[in-house]
Image (cartoon, rainbow, N blue to C red; front, side):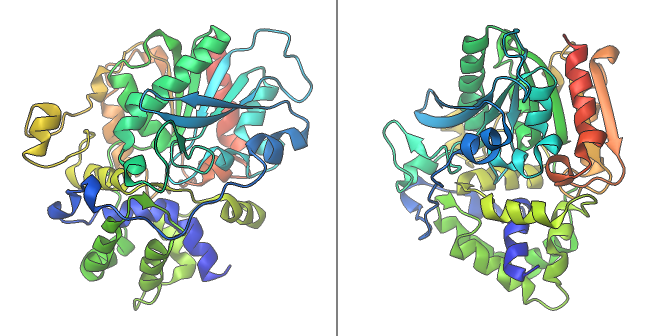
Length: 411
């Protein structure tokens, strides 16, 4: 595969890693200092339903949800399986993607291998989320993506606004408690939300795939190279409000790493996400056609803070701005141990995952040491890395069937 293609595949995992080496002073972002990438992501004519769902014989609806802070989010619904059965009241399940991708990331394999279709065929009413800033969620009630203010958010806002808005909508449409599936960043925002009780009585259970919470062990040789040789170049990215992985500033930085002695770009994606065992070339090609997606630079900074500080906390504005925002010098910590002990949780993680490192998952699981024993299921997959959980050709047999069984056990 060409270097440019690998850069695109690597970007969604790599951006968190390289930004983690920022010095403290690089985190002071203000609205007035933001600029914008020259490239604009133009959404394709066909939405996710038309391009990836109805073509395989499934019903699919394109819907919209507006958050309290004005973002208009795209939401897809697959109300029944390919053979029908929608007349029965089917339990709703919300599927939330990770960082720098969108809902399309769940549809890169044939339908019999994709989690949303598998859930639909197993009797679930499936809803697919698309985070603010991604191609189908680039609208706002008063702001435009060309304005820096549109990008003034981090995953704190996904916890406070995006998830609650989607849960409210799905609950309002179905009248039933909701099962949740998250991958990568989709697990972090869920854990933070659960710890603050934001989803109230709307949540039934959660499956966390390749969970991201603590990130202090996310350390690779490429990270060392970036820290020693390209810190100054990385800081130029902070002139951007929109963090677009295929844009020129990020692409130039990644290319500069490829030119560094000893760095082999043909191993770049494996070095970032871990050695994925089970991807095929057609899946990767489809990924490169659709991903990665934009997020806010401020969100990337927040994730970098999580790496650096070793805690799951709200965005750190620095002193004295923290005092104005939070009433205290340090940002509040999300207390994951506050997650209700009787909330059914399924956690699946991989032994080769360079982003959701096994040691960091152990730190996460330590928060569940008082969890009701019969409410916590943990799966360890020795050969899996980060992308295998959403693109692995054998993910149905290895992971998804277990997710289906877990959800059915809650019924």
